Image (tube, rainbow, N blue to C red; front, side):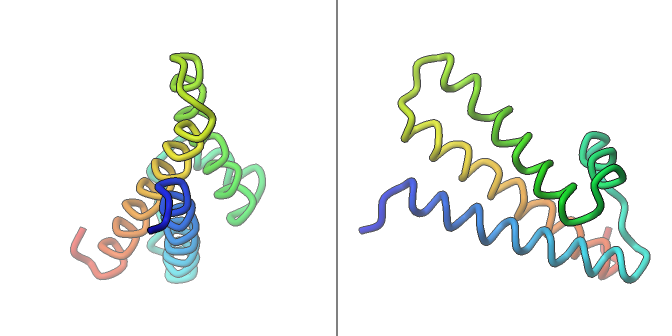
Length: 104
């Protein structure tokens, strides 16, 4: 059975690809609205792809630092960082798709 960290890493990759793909599709159709002011600023500053990757890195730090300071092991922190950002990325992708289909 795969470890939790490996599953979280897969969730991170799948979520990131889904988010970047759906955002690219939304941008090309003119329906894109960034939900996060920090993400919007980073995307404006660095461009869509680099801005999104930097936003994900910032999210990982925001998730990981408090858990690390609370005494979490490196493996636990890494699992939460990958899984948390992966899940948030999947939610962002779902939001983008709902906006594109006109449901939201």
